Image 1 (cartoon, rainbow, N blue to C red):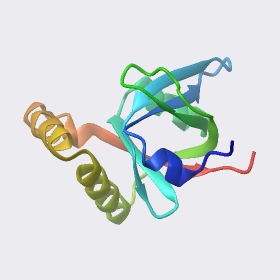
Image 2 (cartoon, helix red, strand yellow; image 1 turned 60 degrees about the horizontal axis):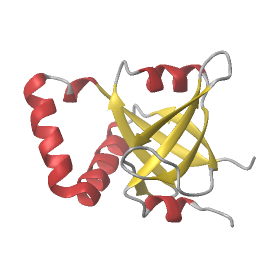
Image 3 (cartoon, rainbow, N blue to C red; image 1 turned 90 degrees about the horizontal axis):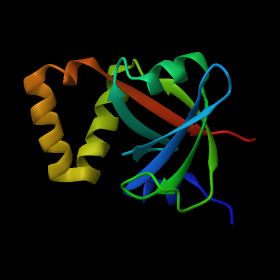
Length: 129
């Protein structure tokens, strides 16, 4: 079965596979939301997944459960750290729309601790491989 961006955008949790410098794959369950043909997720700016993406933008995603157990096919993606303010605004709106009170609660406590300002927004686009 071929998996698509809209299929994964509908999922509550998605496993993001990024790669260490030695090629080892690291799986992380994440929230993500669609804007156009791209998917967006956020992370603490100095998180290892952000560092791995900066070093190697190749990644893959698959539907998963809350604990990260993969329950679907993998989709290869290209990841990048978003710096454009207009894209950030659209992506965070999409995340707030999708995750509602959970995102609001996370934003509130992240704002209190100062971590909200240190987030990295990650854009995922499907690759042809």
